[in-house]
Length: 212
Image (cartoon, rainbow, N blue to C red; front, side, top):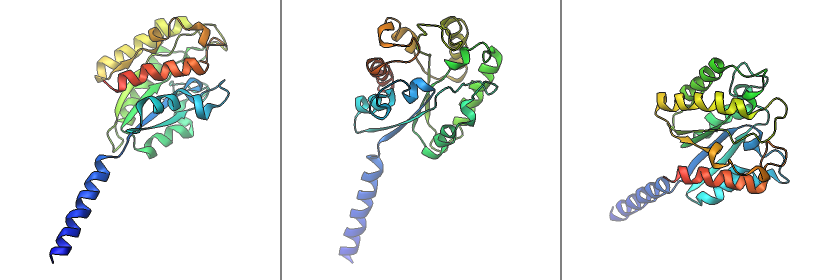
């Protein structure tokens, strides 16, 4: 009987240890900048990969970026219809980092009310996930060259103010990638997407906020 009690106690402690040592699961929601478009090896240098290395073994970071996607559900390619959106729920994350808005600045996509309503709906939807993840909102990185309709003026005058309102309304933290990457034009070869160093710098800014 004593042996059984000892075995039971051992298994219970082992189970508790396993639960407590589970890595914190971080999901990165975003567009091509998150996915790693333009990088020679996305699977090794996209910012979520660099973020995982910075956070260490206590974290597991998943890249759910999808190129060309918008936050706006009425945009030309809403993140809402991408398979990555469904993957967020299947992952049961502890933390969600949202970095969308760059493609929303295209003239055919931009509508402040639609952007705000879509963003609020995404926050509300992610709040239904059983793991009750912490949600971080990100300002887009600067746009150093107008391309495909993507432009910096809409980031500054449109996207960022909406994110500020949503942050205040939902009591959610904001990661300021816009000002944090303000002087790094050299790390954005096409004016939109970061190179490997730019991706690493984005990861550093996010890591600093997640560790607070």
